[in-house]
Length: 113
Image 1 (cartoon, rainbow, N blue to C red):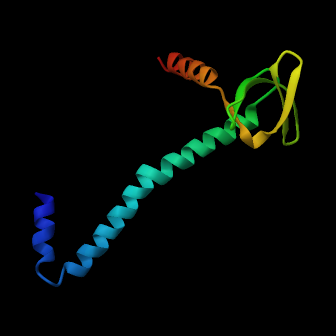
Image 2: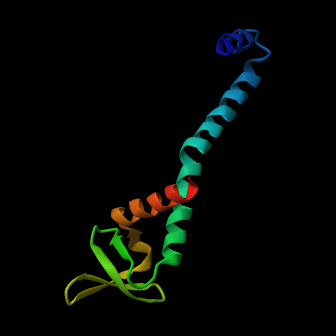
């Protein structure tokens, strides 16, 4: 119904420019709320995780290597991936492992009840 009213108004000639402007603003708002804002929230959560990691946490690297953090020096993380196998990776390529992320979500859900 609203769309019919808007199209009828656009046919008048004078409202066509305003109608185009409204549609452009509406499209920008849709892109912001459905694409840009969720991505910014996700980036903020990842940044928060990287700032809070400590020795003993289980993580996964951007390349898909699962391991346990042994030490953190500046921007380099020493990651134990097997017995007596330790690799060094950039802190920016470390993400929470799926199992730990689901456990953390369960704790948040239980706390909110």
